[in-house]
Image 1 (spheres, rainbow, N blue to C red):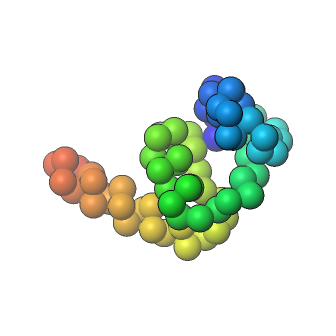
Image 2 (cartoon, rainbow, N blue to C red; image 1 turned 30 degrees about the vertical axis):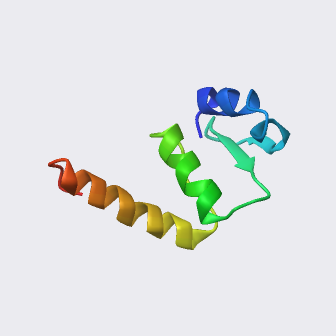
Length: 78
């Protein structure tokens, strides 16, 4: 995620206890103990562009499907 997104999460009562680590490209990698779809997918959708699911990989694919469906519903190509 972007540094701004990481700052936003570090102020949250729940996510401030997560592990934040800088990546070589200037982004921030966050480790969240609860990687359930119910927790991760809404978080990434809320954060928007700049947020990326690294693991679990199956959630990446699920998010791609959701976002392609949303793009198609809004006149995009997906």
